[in-house]
Structures are given as structure tokens and as C-alpha cells.
Image 1: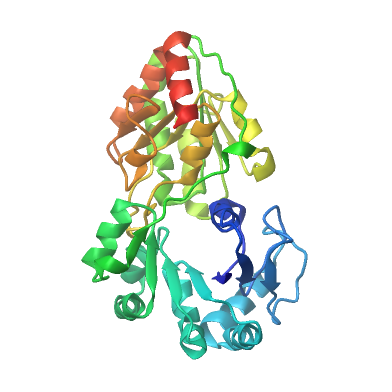
Image 2: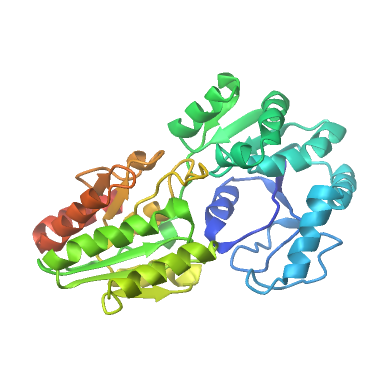
Amino acid sequence: MHTAHLFDRYLNTTMNWAYHLIKALPGIKTTIAAPLIIENAFSDSSFHYLWSPIQWQRNVGEWSISDVQQKTAQLFFQKIPLYQEYVFHQLKRNKPDLLHAHFANVAWQYLPIARRLCLPLVVSFYGYDYEQLPVRKPVFNHRYQILFQSAKAILVEGPHGRSTLEKQGCPPEKIHILPLGINLDQIPVHPRVKKSGQLNLIQAATFTEKKGHRYTLEAFRLALPHCPNLHLTLVGEPRDPSILRDVKEFITSNRLENYITLLDFVPFDKFHFWLKDFHVFIQPSCYASDLDCEGGAPVVLLDAQATGMPVISTTHCDIPSEVIHGQTGYLASEKDSKMLATHIKTFYEMDNTLYQNFSAAAGTT
């Protein structure tokens, strides 16, 4: 079977889950189409890539593509369908059996190709395309109805996504749940020792509103007077510079410089080993003010647990299906900093015997 996977950009490190999803399909010939293709750890020699004729920068990483190149690719992808015409002729010569579009807005751009080639189109929803996109761009309310009727299948990460799209008018029989996963064979389990009266917290997430950094910080501030030997590390791509600016201002205004470390980036191939120095992963995901959401659950929660690290998170979207409250971590309601602080204090005071129970459960979830 030959499948063409369609993106608007392949592939940011933070979307590593898409690579693992594609790579996990056995016996499939894979074509990747995107107006921007990035050279990084997810450039797989077994995939065939349709390089855009308007991408003049080749063999560059995600941090090296110029603003001009990005804006040019966006223009010719969304406004002037030059790239789509190129993809149409390439796929016509080497016709796949199936088109799989990743994110609903991407599916809309490639829909004419599916129709012209008379190929079935599968559409995967992941996060902002569930509710944020139709709010920010109301034209997508109508476009979604066309996609729901035109697509052969709609893939979501879990029950939350299914319910959301059903409410928007997607025929239930077209919706299929496909949870994102990780490659356990490539993730080391780290033995950790945690004494009562110490805790190293880590949050690894892009700096966007839905990742809940403000609630991490507020919970940390509330817990610190009761937990003096407490430390937090924040690492992530500054996708929203205003969020990162707010984080820095919170740290400074609350005199937390000695307790919180900010890091820009950790390479994915070093990420799981790097986690060995932390006791608990914290990720208080929530709905953003513009309805951006996780859609399902952040894959990084599975990454962290696979190394044997418990998690503090929220009941947002499908997170309760990945973090078992009271066994592999603790969950709070969205935006509930006080409950998050309580969970931090619980882990801080926890002795190593009980911590090992959480660690073992996390590593086998």
C-alpha cells in the first residue's frame, strides 16, 4: 500500500509523534508532501519526499529556515496553489492508494488534489483545529462541513475529539479514534531515588497558553514556602513570545530566580536521557482563551512516564486516559493552581518507598 502524508511543514521536533505514527505502519510505501521540508532527526531515508519547487533552502533545520522562505511557502500554499499543482502532477505520475492530511486546515488545502485524483482522503485532527480554528477563522465552519462529507475517514486522538467533532456535525460513523503513541524500545527507564523533603520538577512544552505555564508558576509559588528544597525547570520552544515574557516577569517579580531554571531547547535524541535528573513531570494543560486545546493528550506525558517519572497534570481533554490519578501521577481541574500546589507538596513530602510505586506504575502504563 502506498500512502501520501500531507503536511504544511515536515517536521518540527515538537511534532515527533507524527513521525512515530507514520513509521509504525508496517509494509507501507510512504510519500511526504509539504511546502517546507526540514532536515532533522525525522528525515527518514525510507520515505519519498516531494520537495517544493519554491523551497530554495535545502538541508536546513527548523531553526534555520528564513522568514522570507516561510512566508513564501505560506503564500504559495494558501493563496496561490502553485505547490498543490506540483503535488498533483507528482502524485498523478506515481499514484498512491490513499491521502492522509495532518490537521484539518492542511486537509482543506489538499482536498482539490484528492478530488482530481479520485483518491480517498483521511483527515487527522490534533489540537487547534478542533475548536480554535473555526473561532479564529469562521469560514472554516463551512469548510469543515465539506471536509466531513468529502473525507473517507476522520481520525481523532480520543473520546474528547470524537465528541467535539460530532457536535460540529461530523457523521459519527466516519470518526475513528487513533491514540498517538511512543516507541518504548527507544526510551530508557531511569531508576530514581527521591527522599522526603526534595523535589525536582520539569515542564517541557512549547510556550503557548494551552500548556498552562502560568498555573505551573503559580502552583510553584504557593508550594515553595512549604517546600524549601524545591526546584522547577522549564524548557520549550518560544512559539508565543508573550507567554515566555510573562514567565520571565513572574519569576523576577516573585524573586524565584534561584528556584526556577529556563532552558531554550533539548534535542529530541537526548530528551529521554536528560529526564533522568528530575522526579516529577508537570504539565497543567488547559483551554486557551481562543479555545486552543490539546485535542487529545500531550504525547510528552507518555514520554515522561515511560522513563519511570510520575506526572502532575489536569483533567483537560483526554489526559485522564494517559495519566492515572493516584497511580502514575495526580490530576487537578484545569487552571486550579491551588490543587496543583497540593499535588506538588504531596510529591515533595513523599518518601522513596511510595515514590517508587508511582515510578513503577508510570513506567508500565
